[in-house]
Length: 104
Image (cartoon, rainbow, N blue to C red; front, side, top):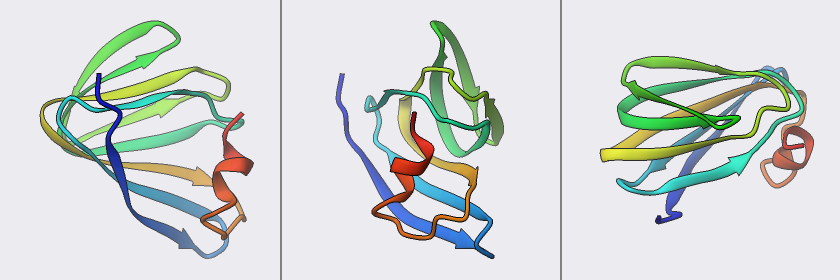
């Protein structure tokens, strides 16, 4: 499986909210990882399969996916490219450090 996605932009809002805007190419996967805190993801374009702790679910845009803290999860784009946002509550505003703060 391809592992090709692009971080299009990092959005930092009022030193409280971080949004990672991504384009996941058709057939590509955001590899399995887990976060220290609950977070929401927003599928705004396309179709994807989300695997969370071994359970796969299919999602079609527009959709909101809630991922609990400590849950291993991955995303695979199917039938075209996917536009995806991950939303996290954090006061980290350095895009080179934000993953260190959020990913377990």
